[in-house]
Image (cartoon, rainbow, N blue to C red; front, side, top):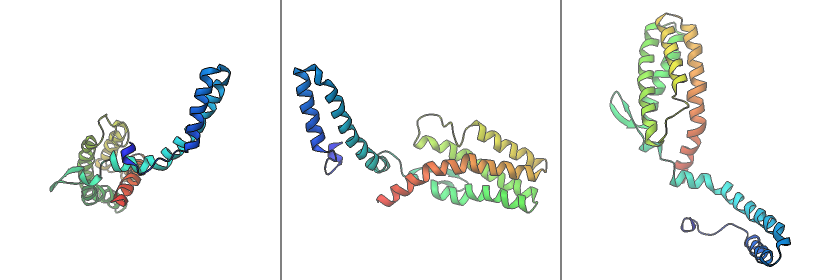
Length: 190
């Protein structure tokens, strides 16, 4: 890590005080509490640096760039942002527009696009994540999509619209809150 930073940010005096406290405690066990106090001072220094720098370090060295994550679309694999805007958002928003217009067939068509893209997006999570995703694309969200589909098929567009809003809050919004700030930070570092 030392090679990744121009300078160390810890307070040198705190580290020197810890060294002194350790030396003194070797010969006088009664001074051991001073060691713990000194460790606390060093810890505060480390904590401040980690708080100030960890997000930028993770964005640069750990988090992938969403533009390198490919999602299958009707026109083949596209970078995540492009696939999302052209197909995922179009399908999701199309459901809402068609529901508001009372267009059951249009809502069903938009749902087909959204469902396909949602599943393709779920499959692309493994581009960055090695463990199974338990949020945003999990079984409970899949069940909401199935319920929305059943309501569209049965002509209950009002209920389908309410479920769509729930998907927007429980999946779309929560995923965006986590992933978009990191992506924007990564883009701004370039």
